[in-house]
Length: 439
Ligand code: EPU
Image 1 (cartoon, rainbow, N blue to C red):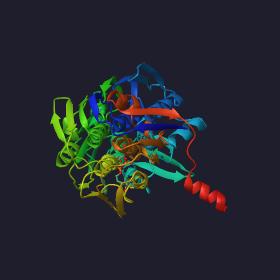
Image 2 (image 1 turned 90 degrees about the vertical axis):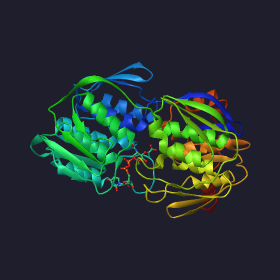
Image 3 (image 1 turned 30 degrees about the vertical axis):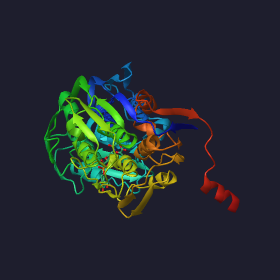
Image 4 (image 1 turned 180 degrees about the horizontal axis):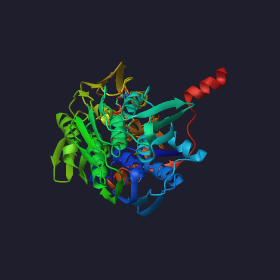
């Protein structure tokens, strides 16, 4: 199996270019189903989640033409949703964003069918707010045998008032997509405000939709009959940028992180500044420098503009070596999203988890070990920890990391890190071996 091998303890220096935003791309690609005509998407990240979605669209009859590594032309004019092969369902089951196919198919065909979505396992990931919103728009949504089936009454959705009981990125996006071509006006209240919500609204508007208020907590959509083709450039990835910022904080050094929107990084920059990391904002870059000791801090994750949950594991990895006790509290996902803590402990971290909080007692240094990427951001945290640690870190299950980070190995190597992707058998799993002996 492929794994990353890191000889850590080397400061990072140089410049790294951030790719397009994963969570914008995985919304925009399904939304393109609504577009009749050629939709050119630029700054698309080269990651496995976008690859899978492009494959799914191909199965549905879209013409997908790669112009270069990060630009694609999609023509969904002839897309159909019937007679889809089993391979497509195998893919929709693997990714979270496949639920956006429901909103897009409902908007385009007045009916939709997809599997229950996959994605990182943080415990229970309900979709009740998606269903509430689509039902308010006039869809009859049913879940049977691992599939979601939805049908719009009279073949077309109708605008409606929707109040989200929980701020949800996915529900906000799904309802926005579906409402873009619904008859009449939709108002969605208590919506998510993440940068990728604004990016999706900008994409839909550039294809002829009328979506207003994205970035505030109320989005108003006046439905249009159809969406037309056009060109759209995705925003840079806030979390990829934040991960490189965290890596410099952990390993030390000075790095210019380019192709970013510094405003999107403010929540991350201010926490790193509290930890005595220097951050200088430019127009489309941030300079990150750390050469002295780190300072402890406390972090609580919240929906945007709060501190992003998708940076929680990487920041915990940084705080492992900050003297004193730091408290990291998960405020978005129930169940804490702390599975990775067991992996950091293998590297000598001192962390206790109690319910939604991790109490991190700073240690002098981390030591390389063989660890697993439990999910996408947990895997990124292992890379951050491995770059800072003394000795050799081997990270298994890197397939999770490649769902969301374009060329992470190449980018860190260009910053002077000693990291390589190697193909070698996994070390025997202690738990599995124990089961074998007992069983
Ligand atoms: N929730 C509900 N009901 C719903 C939907 C969500 O109770 O119908 C709850 C969730 O259980 C959670 C909270 O609301 O406690 C927020 O969930 P949200 O719907 O915002 O999450 P998501 O749309 O499933 C997206 C990102 C995640 C990111 C979260 C929060 C995508 C594809 N995924 O997930 O990204 O953690 O928003 O910002 O956009 C990642 O990139 O690593 C990742 C997991």
